[in-house]
Image (cartoon, rainbow, N blue to C red; front, side, top):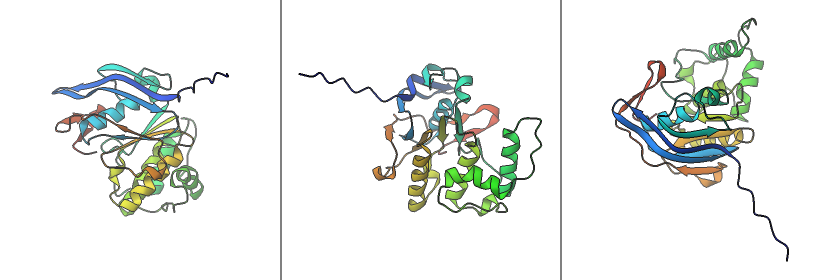
Length: 243
């Protein structure tokens, strides 16, 4: 009789145990245990509010947890996690002015990413293609001259993801997919995030049911978190209620 070796467990991108965050008023979330597999799109089903915002910031290394442990690709300190994680489309953290043009956002991000001694000119159509095509896929790209306020909910959110994801770090944390209200656009958004999961680990959140046929790898139920308080983020930004 031949012994069959046990199948090795899937490698994890994120492992959290007893993860807890507190604010001036008390508990924000936790203690939480989370296991997020490496690669693909993982959707966290969690109630909207300050707790969900704080959890996303913690997973991306933008906030230090009050208690518990967090391992992201073998890194456990927020500063080290920050270097392998991008955070996108979280209102009050990466909002853009509606009167700003796409070309101005691209140019600003290119200059931010460049080494200090490089002179970066205004973004071109080639830059638009390079930065946005991996996120938009076959969808039409916005025009360089378009104003943010002219973009659809879907295009606006995908643009924010593209701007955050220029370095294509191992972990991409994206604010809740419920920001897109159209059912059809919501499905497209999930499909595009799932496509990004072919090269990265992508994590987003929702409070709603998700069609199992859209390509996400895992759907993780997150216990209820505080939603009726205002959470103050670093730098003075804050999130209140739904993000």
